[in-house]
Length: 264
Image (cartoon, rainbow, N blue to C red):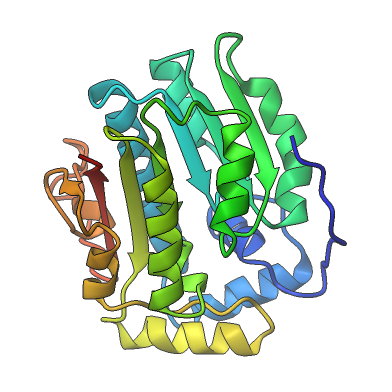
C-alpha cells in the first residue's frame, strides 16, 4: 500500500471527508462539517450520498455475481464506509482483487484498518494517486491487477472534479484503453439539471474545496462511447437495477446520471 506522502490539511474541507459526514461517518473535521452542513441548506445531500452509495453496491454485486468480474479498480474511492467495494465483491467471490485509488492522505491513513477485512484468498490495496494522472494510476494498478484479464473500472461521483469535460473524458478513455476486452466501466456523476445543486457546487468551490462541476447528461454519456451499455442504460442512480424493495418506494434522483458498460 502506498504511504501517505502529503500533509493532512484539516482546516480546508475535503470532498472525501464531507461525503463521510453525509453518510453518517465520523472521519471528518470541523471544516468538513461546516461545509457539509452549509450544503444541506441548498439540497438534501445526505439522501444524495446514500442513494449514490446504494448504486455502487448494486453495481459491484452485478459485476461480481453476474458479469464474473474478479478485479476492480475503484478510482476516487473516498473514505471507507459500510459495504465497501472489496467487502461486496469478496463476499460474492473471495478471490477478488480490488485496488482503491485516492489522493487524500487521510483516506490512505484509514486504509490500514480497512485492509484487515480482506479475505485470505483475495487482495485489497490502496494507492495514492490523483485521477488527473491516469498513467500513474495504471502503472500502480499493474503491480496488483492482471491487465490481461477483465477489470471493472469505477469512477463513482468523481469526474466532476476535472478541469472540464475534455480532461475527464481523456482520463476515462486512457484507463479504459489500458484494460482488456471484457472489462467494464461504471460511472455516476451529478448532472446539471438542478439549479440548487449547481448553486451548491459554486459555493463549495468558494469555500476552498476542490471545485465540482455538474455535467450535462450528454457529457456523462460520452464516457461510454464505443462500449456496450448494460441494461437499463444511462439512468439516475436510483433507477439502475433497484432492489425489489426499492421499486416504487424510492424517489428517482434525477440530478444523478450513471451506468455500466462492457468493453467489446
